[in-house]
Image (cartoon, rainbow, N blue to C red):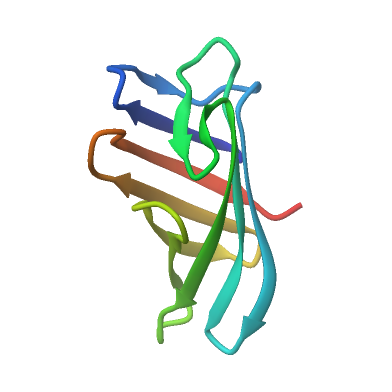
Length: 116
């Protein structure tokens, strides 16, 4: 992750910093559909996130996604959660993403992911 901000159900609004990490791993893809894992690693001084493994600072979530017919827009959803991600492929190595999760553990964020 190169940059971004997060709004958290606990009341925190903040920029991601060098102690935060977000990694999207694609395990399998067929045409425009894929499955994989998104891993959020939050700064230990920041708020914890809620997911399938509970509440914590490191949160791996299985995802299922699709690349839109325009070959630039990407959507993925958490398998065990309510988070919806929408990405826009800026170039072959960079994606701008927004994420929304409603409910008791609501969170929103925007981030720039860079292929490594």
